[in-house]
Image (cartoon, rainbow, N blue to C red):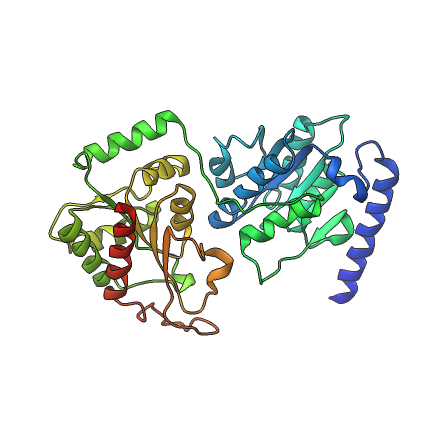
Length: 370
């Protein structure tokens, strides 16, 4: 295995050497990276949270380089995450190179921006894979900075630092370009039409003007070991209904809708289930209109954060909160009541009680009113 890894590394090192000689016009020396104003960012992340946690990078680039032009090469839900982002000037949809490298390269070459101008290619976290790097290489992008498993092909290769969050790691790309960087929260933007549709959906669900709406994220992948018991979610829903008169809105994927309905059937009042009925900008628009969220550590949590929704987060004992969760942000209450090195097969977050959750919800809602 090490022989083939070394052979591949030597081959890539050779390619990089040839490229530096033949692509002088578009290649930029490391000591002049701070002069670059054009950026081609690859976004083929396979996890929703990974794509959302890249969005601060675009705002940070625009702040660091006021004249920056940013083009994003993306596939899958990354396109929905960035569709209305004002910091992205050009969005180039290609097949994922993880599924069809040849087609992804062909399409990129036909639409490659910044021809004849210096630009940097950036690979945030989730885009380290060799096939993503090959799309950049074969598509004609020469000055590469970011996270990679092929450091020989990069001007500035980065590796994940586990003492920093996903967001902070991605912002290291701006530092690698020679700029100071500030923290930015993730954002998903949406259109006026999508916000109007969200208001109509709430009205059709029976939500009255001024009535609080609580978003519940109750489902997660069975392989993630991040579940909380349905009866506890029901108790929290009853608390919000009785204390605040809140309408409960359940979100998730289409495949989670049946489990959500089973949970809802145990409640003595009407609720709404929109699982699988929205795309990402529509879901973000909907969550932006809501009052509070109660969520597991899973994909829609990151959508809620990106929409500015205050949330109580039920966190598993085995997952370090720093990497993914909004630690130190007073718009969120993170409930992580135990620590363990890894999840057992039968793990459920029983160490977080209903009382813990209702107290955190009460605290968050009281803070919001003050």
